[in-house]
Structure formats: structure tokens, C-alpha cells
Length: 131
Image (tube, rainbow, N blue to C red; front, side, top):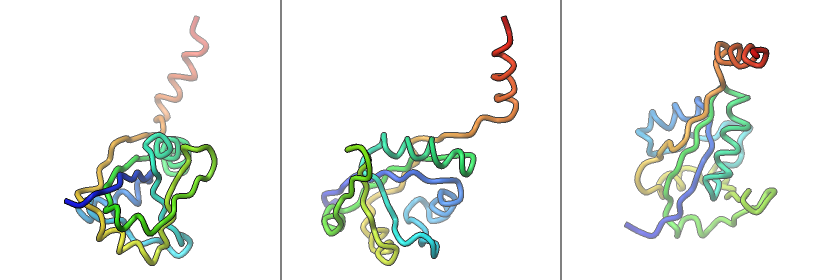
């Protein structure tokens, strides 16, 4: 096995279903309005995106972890897009198949976040009035 870099990807349920259909081996092609595939460099940043962006927009968020050959990733600079921990790679959509070919092992789901159910929300709201 060659030297790898561990990447993280926050994802929603639709993208995760496509990853699952590949046997957790490949990322799906980007949509026309998605010119960049952006895996992130650390678990905490992926958690923030999955929890704070994916859950409100789709009801669930997942953090995935996967390993890519270092020689492939060396061709792409890392970008910091906020705090130092907000670092990510920008892989052009046309390079995604090459990235998929450079994945070693499986894409793993390591965290799952769900929107609270209406019942849980009601219980939490009613509980505030209990004395």
C-alpha cells in the first residue's frame, strides 16, 4: 500500500446513497452547478459542515473518511477558507474520476447527524414550561 492522506467529506443523504451504491468506493460525478469537489483536511471541520449545513438543508448530515494516495493529492494545493482548521482541497470536477481511482480502501461513515423529529422538538418545547 502506498502512502496516503486521510480526507474527510461532509455529505448529505443523496450523495451518501450514491456512494453506497458504489460499494463505498467512489464519489459520484459532480452536478453541473458543482464545479469543485472539496474534501476537507480534518474531522472537526467536516463535523461542523455536516451538522450545521447538511442537517438544516436535508434533514441529515454525515461525515465520511477516506484515504487517497499522497502522490495524487500532491498535485492540489490546500485552501484555508476561514479559521486555520477550515482547510480543504479543491478538486476540479473533471479530476474526480482520477481522485476516485486514487482512493485506497473504502469510504467510511464516521459520524451521523439527524434533525430532531417533530415529537422530540415538541417534547423539548413543552419541557421548558414544566416546573
